[in-house]
Length: 542
Image (cartoon, rainbow, N blue to C red):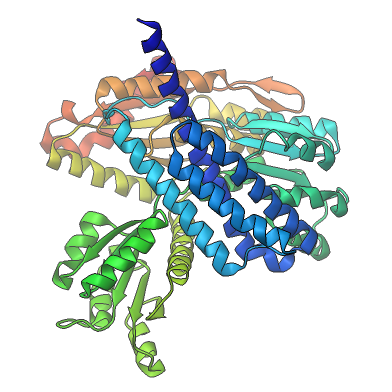
């Protein structure tokens, strides 16, 4: 290989790494500005100025390397947004709500453009290709008690987090000059005045404390706490909140179905929402609404009230006739100003009524709030509180649907049962609280080592069901074997005593089973699991 070829490869690799870091920084900036919408009324002027100055500096730092790596439009936009913030700060204030909405729209637009560019420049990957582990989230822990801080750090490290511990807020703020964590965990017993510098760090904050008083929780809320946990810590509960916050910072794009016969307005709504990073589909023919729901599977239905042949409330009533769509958020969008008619429309199953004309910022904000609430409700209804995975009924239903889909469209799906070895011994020796830590560790590991399209659920006690679409038996075995081996290397600590656990798995691939026996795939995977157990455990059997 020539020197020029090597140089070109290095440049391409550097550009790819920079694009990934740029996407993360854009997401972080969006989060920071969204937080200001909610928390500005509770923050004093000095802290607000610190936060906006931090945003200004980050935009400035983004501009120069963006030009260097060929992302010229990102560099130009970053300089433009930095100038908006600078002018506001020089005037003794900060960007108003409208300016913040404009900045968010621009930043989301840049995110979307980078994603599209990445899709066009990357070589296509096979859906059957094994993915590597996700990068570890960076967690900072600020705890005066160094011994306790070390113990908490060790337990969080078991879940795959990269934890950095500090004994004071001053240490953390000094470190923040060169690195920004994903989440900060702070001991609320530290003097709250010392926490002020951390307010300028644009990442979520969780508080831990041995005080459960109303005043202590109010102070934590004033410091924009995203959670308040009592000592001794319930680590699985803390990990669940960490996972939730990380998912909120990098959520999958919301899917919106727009039903409106006015082509121009529908296209306008689509452009506004797509610019904000959402996936949007426009439906002009209301008769196809159930078909479109089935294929696109939106998270929100945005619908006009008055259309030539069908009324929005009637369509909403039809949607609500199907159990599958009984909780789908439906938002009416209409020029109707008569309050009685609006209330009547809402009584047909809709959740909100927005009046035309509507600003882009209001539309995006309204949709985001509804999607967030819907996702939270879905999590509460369908996911296990300890692991954050799908509950038994939900994962079993999802597995059956995916198996039927795989046979119908002729692609392989691998189904696996995963179970902890000698788990009763862990509970008897170390207690159920430690057992919960082990179970939650398996759940976190499965999420980290599997793909986004894979489905994972807690099937019972210490047993998990995994569904791997577009995955052959060979690649399914490789993925499960990787998880088994990695889990066996984890070390758990309890009262100064270290121990390890292992797991077993049984799997079956749909293409190895006749179609008339597809109803038995779960049973066959369970039988393979029992073979792994009888064969000595700590192995994956087919």
